[in-house]
Image (tube, rainbow, N blue to C red; front, side, top):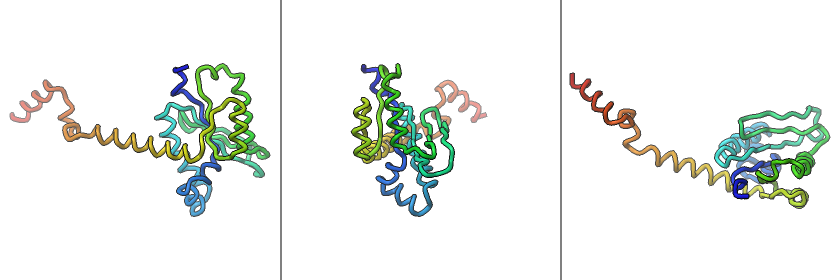
Amino acid sequence: MSSAVGRAILFVDGYNIIGACPRLAKQRDRQGFDAARQVLSEDLVGYSAFRGYQTKLVFDAYRQGTPSREDALTDNLDICYTHPHQTADSYIEQACAQFRSDIRKFSHRLIVATSDRAQQLTVVGYGAEWMSAQRLLTDIRQVKEQVRRKKRSGMGRSKRFLANRLNPEVQQQLEQLRRL
């Protein structure tokens, strides 16, 4: 079962996460839902790639006339908009129910990120793991910080210049050319 540790399918209840994150809620209040959805999806692109998760960010189209659709933003992130009379909760519950008979259940974890208590109980009943909105947001911040630290440590003084990255023979040849 250790092969499934990093391999996971993550369902994110988009509006629930936006509502639980002060930064995203402020974005929503100032610039609208489109802006908040954009910021959340950008956060999840890097997070999903870093963790190796196949992420589905789900937004309600409940009480709206728009047809359902799924957009593949990257290899690791799909954005799903539900049917007009379907909530994100019911979409995620249906996906969890289908996962029970999916062969991937033996090699992947199924995680649902939401702070909706009823949703939590339902998805755990289907065998999925539950992650609170706050836990997801904290994990995203930690991943961003790890990436920043990695970038900083990789940009030491000697690696800043192209000439310092060349092998010693090429550096010597360039030095000889410079002196001519």
